[in-house]
Length: 106
Image 1 (cartoon, helix red, strand yellow):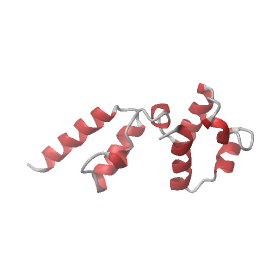
Image 2 (image 1 turned 120 degrees about the vertical axis):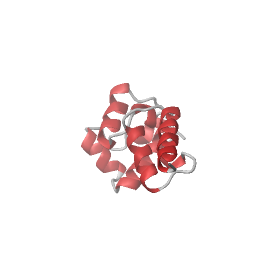
Image 3 (image 1 turned 90 degrees about the vertical axis):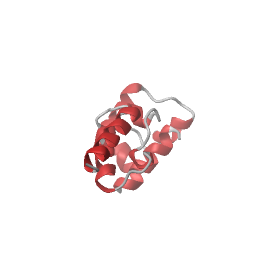
């Protein structure tokens, strides 16, 4: 998934329009639409990541969205989402979830 798709999905899930995001971030209207053909600066990507409280790695597709972690629901999904947003690697999120599941089964 490309960066623009991730941003669109974040906007949709948070009830924010792309135009409102661009305005809040101080970008020119329609600038994010060009991110498919023109690579945005690191600063712009960081600004969007900060706005949504996600990692730059998440926007770049370097982490697995919490919703895609296998066998995760409810409180586990919340834990995975928090861990991911704090910058943990997908493998570490899965280890954390496995540990919690193991403790719960005791």
